[in-house]
Amino acid sequence: MPSNSKKNNTDNNKKKKQRLKPVKSDALFKKIMANPAVAKEFLEHYLPAQIKEILDLSHIKVEKESYIDEQLRRSADDLVLSVKTKENEEAFIYFIVEHQTTSDYWIAFRLIRYVLLLCERHKKNRDKLPLVIPMVVYNGTSRYNAPKNMWDLFTMPDLARQLLAGDYQLIDLQSMPDADIKKKQTLGMLEYFLKHIKTRDTLKLLDEVLSNFEEVIIIDKQNGYFYISVFLEYTQTKVPIEKKQELSNILNKYLHGEEKQIMTSIAQSMAQTIAQKHFDDGIQKGIEKGIEKGIEKGIVRTAINMLESKLDLGLISKVTGLGQDEILKLKNKTQLKS
Image 1: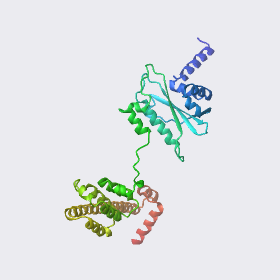
Image 2: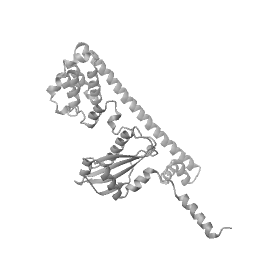
Image 3: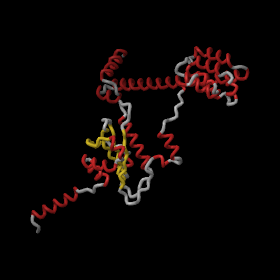
């Protein structure tokens, strides 16, 4: 028979083997890079010279929060190191450790998502976003051939870079003189309406649009009065019932013959639709209120029936949801009536 000491050694070896779990390559990398000296050496070797010039790598901290979607954890993991620039501004080094057997074609797209998520979490109470430097560490078995930037994922990379990395196209209506807007005919009507929609009384704005673009109404006729109908629909929803006559007067002032007849018909149809909606909403609210009252009456009736059966107050409260004080008040009322 084996001695007790040999048996104990065997048991200890088994326990050690049970405790030793396989270490994934991403976990290994993260553990090593958690050492500031190692991280500094790694970054000094791999960061571009122009980036190293602006960073202070003497203080490196591992950010514990993860930014990768849960469903992607099988294929990748992230490591975020926070550093400072030499001007003491916040900056981040964003690592993805790619340990798949083949390179992921969409990794550049995923990186942008994660970088934006990191920025989203750091924008609170700030007016500038931190610098984020994305890095991918690949240790797959096949040759790495995935695009290294998001633009190469587009069918027209140069134009995509220009559109998404450059300034967005701004149509600043407030900076446009009204005189220039009026020259644009139907487009001008839209721009004028949008420019003044927050600064004008709704009826006054419609009056101004019809006055300034009276000739354009004929052009809009070819589109089935699309613009005028939309403006009228918006106005109908903003104007109270007591001002509907004022709306009719504005239409009568600028619309003639066929235009007047069509717009009046559209206005009446819209008014009926809006009135019907208000009516339906009122009916629905009435039904909901009635249901609430019905439920309330049912609960009270149940409580009274249980009181008449001389059941315990605690049980009645549990069944009906009423407080015991409310049940006692009901009891007193029913006794007074009887």
